Length: 349
Image (cartoon, rainbow, N blue to C red; front, side, top):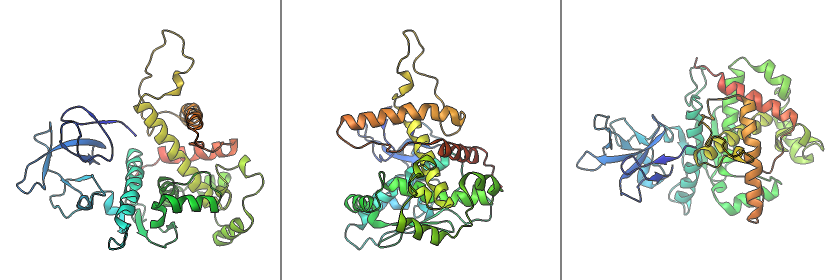
């Protein structure tokens, strides 16, 4: 993720901020410019704002869900009851009358906003893009099965509980489990429909991931009963990816999003491991690139591998497990490159 500054005082601010702690300006995320902006009230009730430094810009207001302190995104629709482009995707939210649900929803929204930010940076559609598919949709429900069905991503609210998430991680022997990881994975199923199935790429997909027409329920039952094959690490990004071609794609998709966002963030904050070993007099910093749109897949991997190793080394030095506890085999490398091609070649229908 890019770094942001307050447009009123030029202080560094962060994606989740709603107030600049230096100058006190109201802050909001503008999905049109993909930037954090400082705001000045222009209505007696304080509901409408203009972007500071842009006096001729249209008035904006916070997403209607800002009243619950779960969203800081902006909308230009002149109706304060309107939600933002990210919250528009919600079909079901937690029951706020239940204890802990508001805090859980806030955690879910923080993760979902980071996913949506990435999708917007990729220029991927949230509404089906004219493919005939419905919009990407989210159900956040208690005691539901986390998964995807026909464009609807369901996340069990309990996943927002760090203790419960760790318990599930232990039960399923998963080295990495996070809300953002769940959302990236499940969004992969949605974009498989758009980019692969409806994009006419099934033959190319099957050549790498195998035939998705294999009985899905039977494949998952087999995985949970017997586990991953002994040689899964030679062919997949994770053990779960071996369960079925759809899960292989979704896991590969999630890892691709992990990599792109991490590289983008590392560059933005000046933590670029490519600087290691540079000789005196070399140019630094490197010219900035957009990891979401610029460069080849080989370029991305040339940056990701030293960054991943650096993050793991830092984590170990603090006594924690690896940030990225995976090794990418050659077969998975090809699948990641396929995801890269699908994202970069997308054209709205």
